[in-house]
Length: 347
Ligand code: SAM
Ligand code: SF4
Image 1 (cartoon, rainbow, N blue to C red):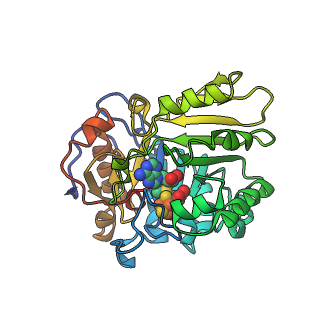
Image 2 (tube, rainbow, N blue to C red):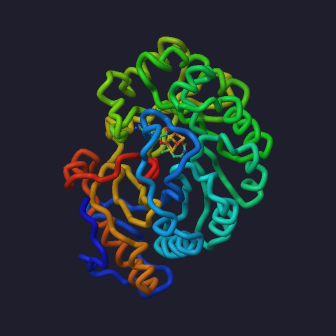
């Protein structure tokens, strides 16, 4: 991995004014969405994400503190970022998660705060998170079968994850999504059950393509199930399903007539949405990553810890994003990656 610290901005930018320039790149994209991994650790061990044992977690002092995360939120809000997502690892394992949501949601310019979680601890936190201003939660549940859940996550926690989903509904968190990584021969026979979750409640079920991010390389075992195939299956089971408008990442969104919720298919491996990318990523150890697939990182934590000013932080962020590769295919050619798991980058 190439680490770059204190790099010089490669374009002439006015970063002195409180409302700095928007974050853009050389291909004309604008970045208004920051995804922050707040934790590398997790209470599950999904087989496509991390091994059962021996995960090289960083020591606590290398993970960003509450104050550092909130400082970054303030700085990016000056640069036009209006959407934040806390992810990880498992963000609900962080004791300060309600505070992070609350303080971020009261930061001027920040319009929405989202969380991606495995849901296991959501029953405990959903009410407080909603009160703190959480706009949306993505709950990762790959199967609705307890034995298969144990097989895929190596933990017997489906009941608590489903309780987390119910707690999010009861708390009234506005946007609820279920993330299911589509795996051939594992959950491709559960598409109907997942879609039925959208019948009575306005949530979105998202089928996500498997990505080659795990050290164990489940990727090579033939479980990849493409977005194209998922859509074919969906249409096979629900011939009456209708296409509705997509977003930057949810390029294919469907709705079964008279169902309250929606179904989305995310081509996270096929990567045909990069032209619309609006995302900045911050790793749990404080590095800006301009693309999920990129191997170049820009050390914002080091800059903060060595006395960097807000102006310098803005310059680093603007410069890091300016050199974002045109798409994920180009990005993965940028050197080699020492990150073994999505938990370190923030999925
Ligand atoms: N622990 C939380 C969770 O599971 O929602 C947040 C972090 S997790 C890394 C974020 C998302 O990344 C989850 O939806 C997970 O399924 C997805 N993910 C992890 N590894 C993946 C892989 N190799 N391919 C596709 N999605 C992956
Ligand atoms: Fe944990 Fe989420 Fe990775 Fe599963 S996908 S091991 S829940 S971080």
